[in-house]
Length: 455
Image 1 (spheres, helix red, strand yellow):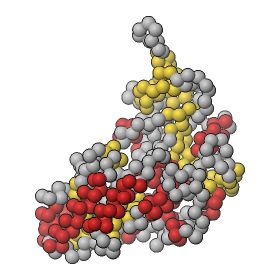
Image 2 (cartoon, one colour):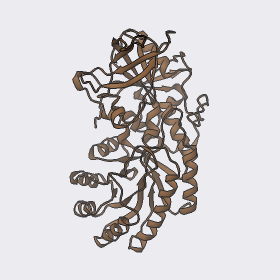
Image 3 (cartoon, one colour):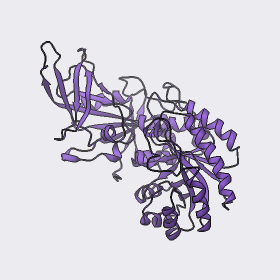
Image 4 (cartoon, rainbow, N blue to C red):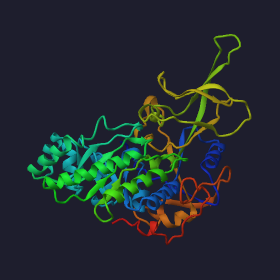
């Protein structure tokens, strides 16, 4: 995981603006050749507000592995989110900006001993486990830990299934592990599950919560009297056109049935929900090659080479099973034709889109890729000497006046206000939902902002 220490100023926009409008301004300046992101802080705030509105009982603990951009992490910390960390470095990042250890869960069921010792030294006491060997390790290096048993509960379909690697069987393994933890004198305080990253089934959360309810009783029977935490994991969608209305209804109904208000603390581990739609990538066409049709009368296939690929931002195509969509920055009016999009490296596997239809592009034209904030930057490398894209954070002026007062954000991070880039639809400032793009920013006195200060 890369933690970039250089602080980048947040561009403050006065008036309507859009990511594509800003990209066009930057490209038209004639000085930009490398790929770059526009990061919309307003999208992050809007999604936090939407989460709190739909699931007020469920505390979001952002999954840092999804995107460890320090500004994204700091913004979520300022809003009041907790954090799901999977390693020593992630714990270092979150605690370095002032987040209290009580707002962190060490949610890696298979932890290195040195990482357990570090978590103990930093006061991060809550951690997950799903095996006998992990219990033995925790007994040796952190016997005072507050443990959360992770069970397997897979969605019928998910972008990245996780049950094949983590989670004990809730019916056969979990009761035995709970008894072993009691024999070892370890304190189990809760149950967690993860339905899989990018889950497309909502009913699975109801099954997971029901299984957790039964294990709460089993744990108490085994002597764990401080069962107080339910972690419903991640799997929430994060694209521009996705919403969590349906899944929130399933979760709220299951919580009402199995865990009455006040009985337990409920957290979740959303990652792509907060990160994906906030980042828009711009990449330039720097070369092209035309392949003649094999058969007479066939269509010529054009290969476009762009300055970002599967070793950079588009690692998500290989590792996160994403289906990215290319949009032309400027409509040149040419008809769509068969083509493919390739990354800049010399590896033949560096293919972003093997078969797509786009207008005819010239060298120097730019493509725009939306919803690129999840599982892209943290895995990107400078393989073959091609740089990882830079991030240009942007925020609406009204929202900036609120955020700059919330630690760990500071006024010095916000640049002078400039006029909006009006080309394209306006960016949301803090809408009630991802679909309400023109909704106004909630007034400063809204509770979502009152609760934001770091504790």
